[in-house]
Each structure stands twice: as structure tokens, then as C-alpha cells.
Image 1 (tube, rainbow over the protein chains, first blue to last red):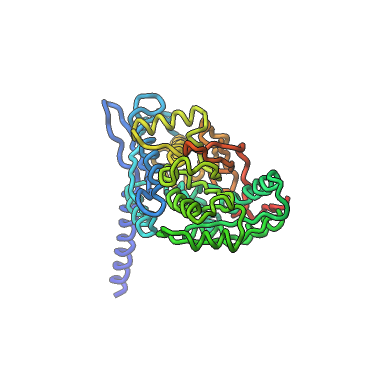
Image 2: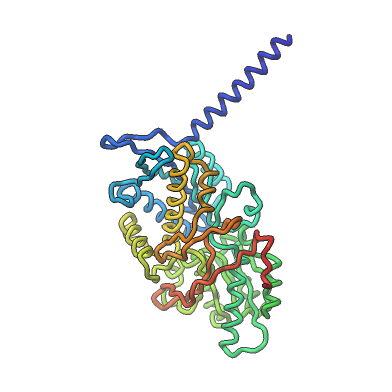
Length: 130
Length: 294
């Protein structure tokens, strides 16, 4: 009986660990992609704006400008070659682009929470809320 | 997750860790600066006695936060009769009751409209219809001067309406950041009318990218987390937006990412022109150490 209980506890703990690892893995940025032989890191970022709803007259253009910024960053970027570069803690130069996801929160709390959860699952660590 | 949000919620100053960065400064902070302008304007007009002022705001939690005892306390000491807030529902399409209250009952000389451009325009239309337009100075809040305001009210009818600007730049400002931002938006959204709203989107993303890059440089892709991004936010010092609002230096514990306010006014062309310099907005809400009397 004791052995059974112990086995059950280990199974439950194991399942929880597997679940947490899966969730965290799902929350990490996607694997880098290759463009013309160069490895490009994809940085997920979330744009949650009220494109419709009570404050749309302000938040919609704000959101459109944010989309335009990330589109420009990926198409051209500061050096004109698309994306941006940074020197990582490994001392190497990395090139990255943004995986900018956007959704209409309608200035509604429930919808905003749904968007937050969905974006978190896709590895978004920076979120704009308008 | 690290957030850059268009909201002012005092409770977020108490959350640990601080992961939500807010724009604009708190309403209480903005109103304290506006009060100084009200007193100056009143005296400049040669008026005597105390001016009366009030807020008309849409019904939302964020608006309710502006209904703070400090607003009335500060106004009292600055010599302004600050009347109670008047709230209206998001879906309101007629403001006869609210306007009659603020003009007839309160005798307001200055009315601060806390709503986005569309309802503000309808309020001003009703003020015109009721004959109240010239009874007060009208100031629309930081997120009201979007393109819908002159579109609904009519460009010529916007003339003389003040704007409390605590966001990014205005399309009428000059600076490389303004020009670049407008050109960028035109490239990806041709035909979109420009206002303070889209320039704020650009300003946010310039900040967000800077914070992201610093995070990646320090921690690598594996360290791209909300906590690490927030850590990088606190390292922001003199970040220049090329005229698209003031440079930003983060202040420990102050999650506001806009720290300045200024006044603008609409001209008959339906555009807002700045009429004051940027003034530092005091950090009041969420700051236990601030004494506005000093």
C-alpha cells in the first residue's frame, strides 16, 4: 500500500514537472530561422490594441504605427539589411527579427486576458497594451 | 511578461515585481500641472476671484482613478474651485445633462475632457448647440487629439480648444524623430491621417526595441523574459526620440514612461500646435515620498 502511494506521488510530481517543462518550452521564443544562409533569431512581441471599441479612435492608429514599426524593422532595420544585430553574452554577433503578433482587444478586459494568454503561449515577453 | 501600457492604474505601482510600464503620467500628476496653467491663464485674462474647473470623463476604472482627493486638495491650495467629476457612459451620444451641470450648476471656467477624440468632438458639438462653447475654456486630454476629433467636429470648429499633451510629439512638431515616424507610417499605411496617436505608437516601439536589444545583449535569446526586459527598462537614461516627445530617463520605482506635460491649442486648420514648453510632471501617484507642497 505504501509502495503504491509512493509510486502515485512520484507519478503526479513527474506529470507536473513534465507539464511545467512543456509550458515553459512552449513559452520560449521559436527556434531561429535561416534566411539566405544566415541564422535569424525570431523575437516574439505582442501588440494588443483596441482597434475596435470605445477608444479605437486613439488606439487603432497607435496600433497601426506599432505594426508599421515592426514591419520596417524586419524589412529594413537600422542597417538596411532587415532585422537588427546585437552582440550576445557569447561575444558573437547575432541577427534578429521580430515575430510581431497583433490582436484587437476591443478595450474589453476579457478579450485582453485571452490575448495575453495566447501570446504568452507563443513566447511573447514584451507586450504593448493600447 | 513585460508590458508597455496605455493606462494609468495606481495599483500597478504596488505590484512586485514591477513589470508594467505606463503612459502617460498619472491624471493627478497631469492635473497638478494643468492647475498651474489655469491660475496663470485666469490672471492673464485679468479675472478676479477663484476660477472654477472640473473634469468630464467616460465611465471607466482609469477615469475613476483621476477622481482622487489630492486633485481637490491641490486645487484648493492653488486657489481653484475644483468641482466634482462628471462621468458619462461610453455609449453616450448626447451630453445635454452633463454640460448643463458643468456650465450652469458648477459655473466651470475650465473643463477638462477625459475621453478619446470621438466623444470629445460630440461633447464640443453639444456645447456649441447649447450655447456653452464660449462659457469656458475646453481642454481635451492626452489621448483625445486623434484624427477623429477634427474630422467629427470640423477643423474650423476646433480652433481655440486646448490640448493637454503628455505623450509623444505632435505632427506639427519638428525633429528627425517626427519626420521619420511620419514617413514610416506613410510607407506602411498610406493615406492614414497623422496625430499624436500614431506618433505615440512609434515612440513606444523605439523604447521597446531599445529595451529588447539591451536584454538580448546581456542575457541572450534564452534570457528574453519579462523580468529581464523590466530590468533593462530601469537602465534607460536620456533615450532620445528625435523630437517625438521628451528624452526619457527612468526613475527608480516610477513605472511611468512619460514624465513631462505641455499645453497645445487647435488652430482653424484642425491641427494642434504646442503653446508651452515641456514641463516635468511631478511623480505624485504611487510615490510615497512626494510632497506636492514642496
